[in-house]
Structure formats: structure tokens, C-alpha cells
Length: 105
Image (cartoon, rainbow, N blue to C red):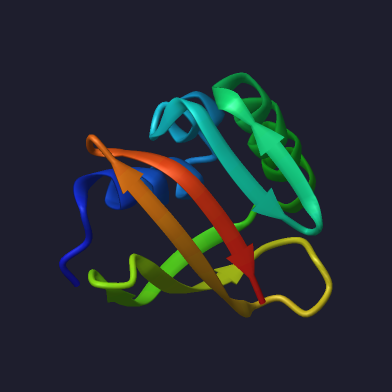
């Protein structure tokens, strides 16, 4: 699958539970929407993903990517009810970084 470098980097960071590398995929002013919560900026994103990694130990397996819509579908498995599930990642990329990410079920 031909993923943009930043999305491939994000997937690798997630699968290695590396919250610093994960946050580095985002711009300083990036926004993440997940589970009804908004996380603003790299610092909040790093704190959010570290907590999620510690709690769920989720790994991502990309299934399909639409470059025109900037949407990734991925199977996510970990320590949470209903695992594994397919989630949809809605990206907005700018200057090779993630400006916005919305994760939906």
C-alpha cells in the first residue's frame, strides 16, 4: 500500500508504542478528534497517545488508503472490548505533517 511517509511513520510509531515519534507526525497546531474528545497541539497529542498506548496497547494494520480523500481504514487490535475493529482515520495533511486527524468507527 502506498501511504504518504507521515502516515507510514504514524503507523510505525503506533505499532511501536512510541508516543514521541507519534506526536512528531503532527504540526505544532494539529488537532486530533477521538472518542468524543479533542486534543490540541503536539503536547496534548503526545499525552493522549501515551495514555492510550499504556491502556490499550493498540496496533494498526492499514487496510486501504484514499489519497484523494486522505482517509485510511485500518484494523486496530489491542486490550479493549471488541478488539479487533476497523477504524477510519480522516487526515488533513499540510507540509508533510498531519494538521488534523479524526478517528471514527
